[in-house]
Length: 395
Image 1 (cartoon, one colour):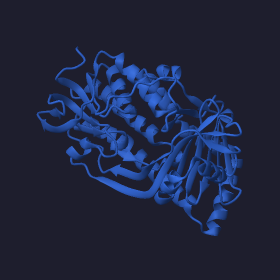
Image 2: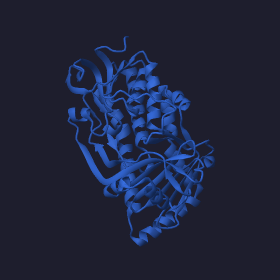
Image 3: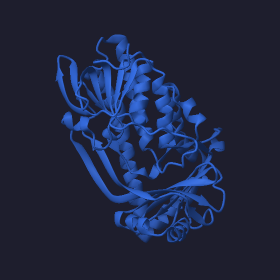
Image 4: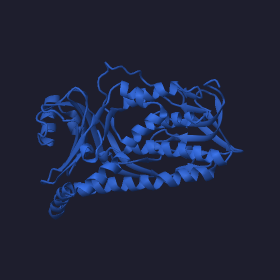
């Protein structure tokens, strides 16, 4: 087939990390796929500065990216496997350490810039003759009739498809067009991100300090650098953004308890608002939602993109299994299997992250004491720690 045509098995609105992964997984199974993306991705060069947005990619997500055909491209660019994780409570002495060596694994995952993942997926998409990447184009409207959806594009063209997938982010146009409501929880916080250099080596360890105002994470990058994600009340984040670099260096070093010595920012600083969202339904007739279009969670455990990639894998698996027994692999019956497979897990993870946010944000002294005792106790129970690691890695 020519890559651009007027009829597809699947049209995916959104060519970000989740949408592109899904597109590649479906194309690999022989599906005719169009990915509609409003922005033309910027080309990536190894000479580019480190991006401010990074993801902690789990072993399960690595496997999905491998199946999509993107992992080898990503590893040829740049990534930082992390071998350990250290979490501690700023209000006491509670601390827990995780090590990949304890479960016989080479690492716990990899810290990868979002722009690198996107670049790897772009190369993978180019390798599929049955996948068309249409950009800059967006979905304007859609109409369902006779087991087909007519999708009107901003280019003026109309394409038809058996399934329209919303992978178009937290403010999903597809979700709105489908009339699917969303439950929102504004955390009144922002995530401040930047790239820093630390006086002491990061030891290929992901570090996270929980403070009443929110967690501060240092994620290892190459060249002795780290990516920071500092969760703060919205007004406090704005205050730190307005600081001079020198003043911010002092503040971030103190906030991190000098765990890695003096800290120096080597990039711009930006902050983005944090909000939890859960679509009331992930599906409608001829429509499915994945990634941020279906759910967003608090970033304190770095699971957002991993959950989205799980969505992509589950939807692709529904296509494969349904195709064997049904001429309409994207029927509402098949899509319900996808929703059952993913919504419960996503809701549970969202509530767990919100629970951690409340737990570590509480300044009630007896609770602080119990919290620190709990961290220290779990740190000593090796089987429990090992199970936590395996689950976080998707093993």
